[in-house]
Image (tube, rainbow, N blue to C red; front, side):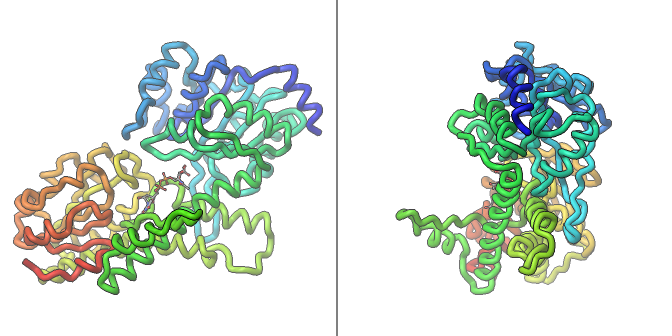
Length: 476
Ligand code: SAJ
């Protein structure tokens, strides 16, 4: 089947012109790195001209990045490749016909984790737009995280139906999952090893040709498309599991009156001899676009590809249970808040809560699936007034996010820290108390960023995730 494709690709020659569909946290850094590689002639960024994100086309063509958080090197590199005429953004998908390789970096959220139903609507639209203008010999790569079986299944079917071409015979198809984190997007693409999985060997080799020029210390790890899909979903499911394990430990440490961070340091000290006790950090919850859904993609893949499973799976699998524990942590933050208020004879009813940190991860503007949202909803449900502060986040649907820390702290009965932004590490208890105006304000630390003793000395009621050693301190 591949010889035909091999000869078509041989006639086209080395990959010169690339298309990247989806100008977001994954697509933008990938596109500028392809454009900066001497091996490639031109890169087009494809972005739908939608009300919510159409503005990105003009912004990118001015050499400006629409991503707000701190992204070292991205703005400069974007300016460079736009200035050199190697990168251009467009909403005209007919230009796909001029590309030798096209990557898709489009969100793949879950519609209903309970029934394991993903929302592939945006991905399907992207695949249709590519399929409509696909030409023989083109390589198509899915960078989005997908349910195992999607590349060789749904994606292939849509591309073939739209193009009239056959995958593996007329065009190449592969999965090369993104492995980026906000705050270090460029570095992650260059330095992490790249998993590349084609639906056949010719597709794998063509995809390796695409990614090799953008890697610095990273190397390419070739495998099948399905193995690549499992690798990506599983590496996030494992991370979620590791976080759930330390969150469970933190809950136990609170119950036993122990400091989880002492325990963590102790466990973490067992190193060397190939021993890795990779223990992560407990906290107020797990957010973002990845860990909150990739376990469900993995579980769905096992069911779709595996048929009738006789062993614990889905919500009963260890990955399902881990999701449950990590989703519980914002609820536990509510519990700590109510406990703190009870210590000064108050209830949430009528209480003022200053919620610090709306982004799902420190020093970023990324608010996807922020664990702060269920906390806010529960506190408001209980009759509290919640004001939100975040130094990076401009706006969020239905929530007023303020950059005015003092204004947010004014009159607060409770100060709750949800994100470990560096701004909160230097919170001064005396100043915070001054703004709160309460004799015994409550501080609930969901990321272990403040010094409990300093706040307790200043008359605060302190509550912290995993701080069993401090959570019942005498009131000063
Ligand atoms: N978190 C903890 N404790 C920890 C680490 C993280 O509570 O020890 C929380 C964070 O606060 C955040 C959430 O988990 O709310 C996710 O944090 P993250 O550091 O995992 O950030 P992501 O989701 O952007 O990045 C993950 C990474 N996956 C792995 O490391 C296996 C990244 O490499 C992936 O590229 C990314 O998912 C993705 O896009 O899939």
